[in-house]
Length: 272
Image 1 (tube, one colour):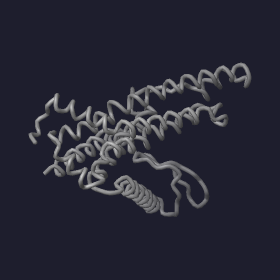
Image 2: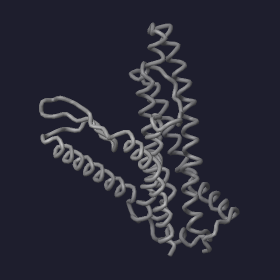
Image 3: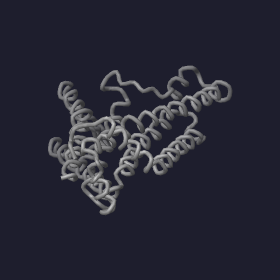
Image 4: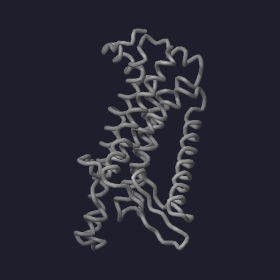
């Protein structure tokens, strides 16, 4: 198939994909919305919306995207279906772009819109309770019951890391689905867990070599870490600001773009 992009052909592919996957995609999204409502309605989370927002964001931006991509590419789980999919009169670019568009431009905005609506409804309710029943001060309300805000003004925005991880995990799932024909989701998840464990072990060994004693890592980022030594003293190790900014840009933009590009190349290999 000619690799040139054709808008009409791409539109037919999108319609076909949505029609064939509609039940699985809709069912997964409904479950996510129901889960979000359940978490917000849980009384133990009522007095701190930040905790609730983090839980829902974790599932909405880190777990569910992998499920969506896996559903979109489950054609590769069976050889007969995979052969039929690969012989569709569409270029590999259009097939890759269909996954990209449905994940980034359909699922992500839908999730954020529903999340914002649910968050606003419940936070309004809990703010009313905080004033009338719990006797919170205005400072306590602003601190413990803030509204969800999608602010991307700078690298320090709390949404930057979840969004960058969203792009990374969805791309990794796509690559795994294209490399593993059967049980790709489980295999990709296992490889990801092993990679994360090995990365933490290497970081721990690196800090121990630098400090010269045994340490335990409390939190780890590529720009620094909080570590505890044998005397149970916790301290942080951070990179300089220029290196920190460079690493943040690399992690948030270069790696996600590179992974999606690898997925595109893998689509091309599959078609060949």
